[in-house]
Length: 499
Image (cartoon, rainbow, N blue to C red; front, side):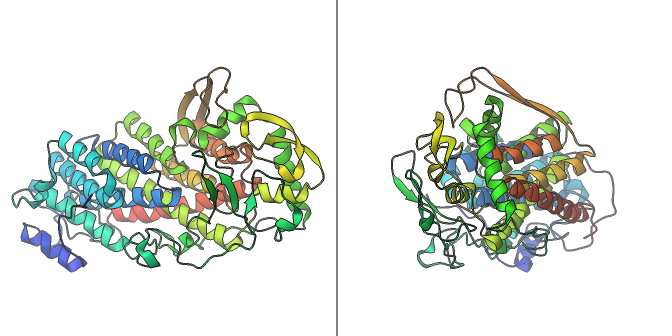
């Protein structure tokens, strides 16, 4: 499907000129005055549409984090045109509209066209859904060309400002950095030191020549197709962040070194935890991995933010700032986590345990995965509580992306709301787990009094699943908190007009 482009504009100067042509101004903004609230619900509604697109396209976590940040940055950039103080990330005050135009309806319309334009760029195959949502708001894409409709053009210009800046951020969205033009393809030249590990067969120690380093897995996917992993986006740590100076700014300490007692102890710990998993712990592992609803870690927190926005009766003036800072925190956390993953290239539990447990009998899940239950197996055939068709994510252990993204998100929600209080729960129906369809035997409710509680559970869930060591989770939480604080500080200077 051909992507529709509204304006052919590139530089910031051209963007400003385009807006001036339809009534904009480069003059200093008028003095600050009370702002009318935008129509409530516009930002949250577009956030739902964006999350649906992530799920429909099965976009991987780091790319999804970037796409959501782009969409919400575009909405924020458009919104600043109708605020007397806030500055755009890329255009500053260039889009500022006269006070008479700063109506809730104009704000909502500009936000919608910014979201539409940005999402269409990120998810071109989802145009029908985006068109339908725009139509539900009594708008059409063609409205951006209407010279008398300033707000649609403001939103479109704002989105292009964000998209133009992101096209050269190192994410390789257009595939120009690699032969064949494959979007998000690796251009770093990364090669694993270990050969692929065949999951369905016991692994000889000689097949893991570098036990402390990451090893790709070979397995049969859910469709019965043989797959061999490649490190997902090993270059992601070099993508240009929103607030960090670089992906390495808060790089955590290295993981336990192979040959150390800590390396041995952490492997033993995972084996013991897996062998003693309670039904509730299995529910936790399944839920935070996406379970039957297929959510990504960043998506969960965007949905949590929807709850907070609706519970607190946020106007779009509040919500646009909340989702702007939250989505960019998730994005920067993905960059920081992937920087550490590439820097340390550390082994996942499946490789370390199969190497260290050679010749031992351990309680483990079999080659058919968690659905078959625990059984005594040779240590070199150990399996995690994770589907055999997707036994471990395709990137190194240290640090945990779930932990980093969740901790960054919680830091934002605490700072934005002024409290750690969350008070939310979900109930998992009986016999609904993706990992083990016969579980749980009865409905299980997961409840979080605070955002910190949710972070702790999201983090430990990856240890319960057998796909992370506890150090990766702990250091990921610390990393996420630092990223969240930096992103909030940067975003706040923009919406307060202090940048």
